Image 1: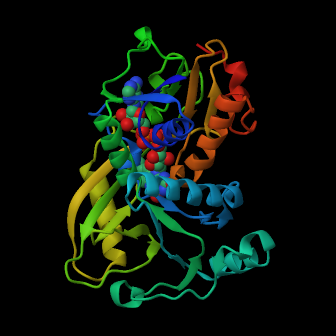
Image 2: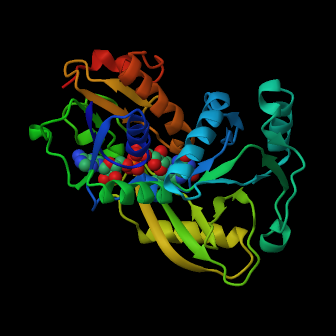
Length: 342
Ligand SMILES: Cc1cc2nc3c(=O)[nH]c(=O)nc-3n(C[C@H](O)[C@H](O)[C@H](O)COP(=O)(O)OP(=O)(O)OC[C@H]3O[C@@H](n4cnc5c(N)ncnc54)[C@H](O)[C@@H]3O)c2cc1C
């Protein structure tokens, strides 16, 4: 079959890759001048999130699928994408400590919690906090490298068009079209009946020169994620009210103020990143086939957790495309069938 993937961020890359592996002809279109969330994200995989220490939705299924698919992509592309990295987070007070300890009594949580993490060089590099705990089975996936390396590959084989797709005149000659447009899906007349949200996020890249680098991710006021090339990704802000997707001075100040409360070594800011996360009201992915146009599909709604969600999400969509297996009801766009498709 001939496929056109519209949008080659994380979603488009993963579903396209699966289809290619199955022997289909896949072409990609992406608007090169737009910023993809995938090229800004830290790519953190974190099974326990939020102030209530909640285990992420379906994490026991998501993790093995993610490990396997990113490993396959590493082999195909010849680059390293997956970095096992421990995550240390702080507790602010005794109440939080009690909440954390009570989670440990739940068998579904125990494999992810580390009450006495090895702090490494954390005490030298950061200011002291009330207490520290660890999350297990965490990782960082280099999404930017994935999207860029994949882009070079499809460019080299003539399977990439740098353009915004005109919805009124979809390029002819394809059997199926899969829209993977991230937050901009709200402008897609075929799928704009779905409750697309959008949460803008900004982050900084900082260089700490000759200071020892923390070989852990650290969450305290901001998230510090060590980078392969040295220094840290520091973020991120979160805003549902935005007028554009570019960086703002106010958010840079906000992030730096927080960073100064955490990091005790000198640093310089080397980049300021911004993009919009494709969030959905009910926090579930958007997968499926258009109710009136059977050749049109969507893969969206990766929200704040694309790195862990997209591998299994792309498998579900692949199974629908190849085998007609319905995607789980929780992520199917059919859950919004009463909204009136365009
Ligand atoms: C600051 C920040 C930090 C984040 N940190 C993490 C993290 O640590 N862990 C994690 O799991 N997730 C994180 N995320 C979320 C993650 O980035 C997203 O879940 C994921 O990257 C979304 O991928 P996507 O392919 O759906 O969208 P995108 O990456 O935005 O890609 C969509 C692509 O479609 C293109 N496009 C749109 N419309 C059209 C059109 N009509 N024609 C052609 N091309 C089009 C766009 O140009 C873009 O390239 C973060 C996001 C941000 C902003």
